[in-house]
Length: 218
Image (cartoon, rainbow, N blue to C red; front, side):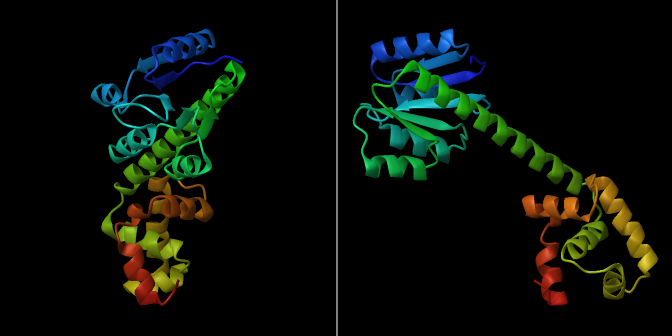
């Protein structure tokens, strides 16, 4: 199975870079190859779509050090490590640092392509999730302060009557606020709205904590 996407390859061995680049190109992937972590950091594209294929042992900085630096810079590309000297502690450290997989050299082209396909699928899913959260946050910014307060209480489980008593307004007025919240947030139902708020707590702009404390819920 071939695919499209960019694989960012970092390995200090030119022969390895050539052979892996060729194999990935033949499988349909664009490859950006670097001899060391420093070269990658100088040419880092934060909007790059794809995955990272990093050698573990390199002269200027190790793959683990590069992984940490990329993470600190906000790079969220999935990482696949490669090494002929892998050990359990190093593997565990890499995985805890967010690495997706660990390939022990020498490895087959089939294994490489399989891991890359998985990494690109992961990258696509992560980007879709971030885009969704961004859309939710943007919708929440369209809410008025009172609408945001109503959303906080609704997703805390309060009924229209309870919310009406809290704000000293009629249940009918609460229904109108609630309807506007559902429309602006593009929520199909209450469960959908709760999922949005759970995924993007900032949508409540701090109101949920205050209302929970006042209502005695949670």
